[in-house]
Picture 1 (cartoon, helix red, strand yellow):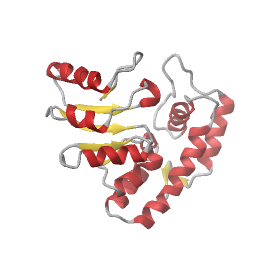
Picture 2 (cartoon, helix red, strand yellow):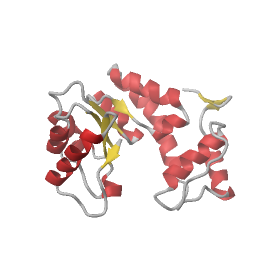
Picture 3 (cartoon, one colour):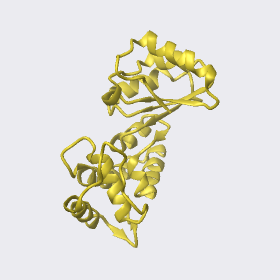
Picture 4 (cartoon, helix red, strand yellow):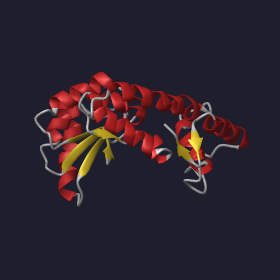
Length: 205
């Protein structure tokens, strides 16, 4: 998985050339990763289509949370049913799968994989009522566990803290320059988990 190079913002031709130069050296297939909040650059739909002319480029993950943009990528890539289109933010994955995306890579699935599989299956089956029902739990998770703290790292810290409290991982260590939550924040995460319908470590839905 490769995000666009950062620091000096690349133009779209330069971005395409970067991957065209790199792809012959790669031993594995490649997913393009759109994360403009971190690298300052969006892959334009036309650039994605151009880069994906190389058979090593097998998919695209979008973490921009910009649904009109993602829809334009899906439309541009409609002639490539073999090319996987995945959504990053879980808050909009169900909606995007309803509209034709292949799935998502969602942080919350580390805590409650069954919930996100159920949401995907409901969206794939075009069961809008079930997607809406499951979306309420997904939004409860998003607006509680991911919002403890004051900084952009709150999502990652909240997710890892919740995983440790659920017994999924032993330690919620976060790589430098970040640090895991202290006890006051851990209590808030535990309170958020206590408000979810969890029995024996499993989310009931």
